[in-house]
Image 1: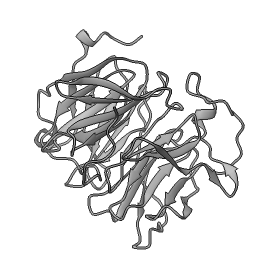
Image 2: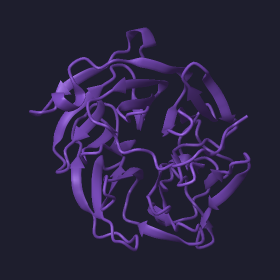
Image 3: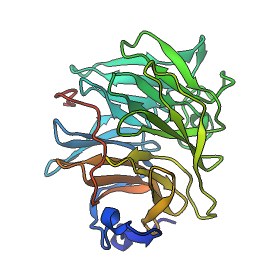
Image 4: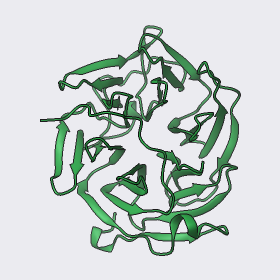
Length: 316
């Protein structure tokens, strides 16, 4: 059973010299949203100074603005999961239960970007990220066909692969970036976009790939494997501007240096973190979605900003 928000606090495991420069000793905690059943997909919209996030089981995409508070963007949301912003600051959605990737246009309408591969329905798009060239990358495990409270109407699996897909900048072509995963989940680029990190929840590991200028990937290599028996698997993942990798995992959020070494673990006792996003004007706030709530803390290094560059979709 999850602890109450009154009992929630941030704790730090200092696992390596120099970690204090990144995470400090006493992290602040702001509660952004309560009564979130299964929070996911946070992304900060810098142009409009607001946070988007999803509640998968609550079947809602939410937005939060300081002082204005929470407002639903889409409900029902086809059990939406990961969110991202494209180059025009339009909201992109990994439609987990609906087996689609779609985009909110600036007039509020929605456009489907991907729903099939070689004529067969996708599994359940999970996490999504946009490269600076405008290409869209997303993971496609089958969890949206299996997880109680998160499934859509069609539970049949049609694809033989569980891969990472890439949609070209013009949206006209989709390719398999890599098919070789048991359960691909979170993904993020390094600050220079020369590396792509993809984690696997079932194997409890992160792989890293060299990214070629044409968008193809080199052979994946192991970045880190989690061996702790504590609750939690690799899920949400982001990089800071120095190339450190932050990933939810067993017992909290792990901070890795660019070589994969664990520098520190950010713990939220009693509350299971699912995903993270950088935000606020200096990009040093870390927004954390969890089972039960969404919170914010502050770190010593800025994160890689969200992709959006101009005012985009605004819900009514």
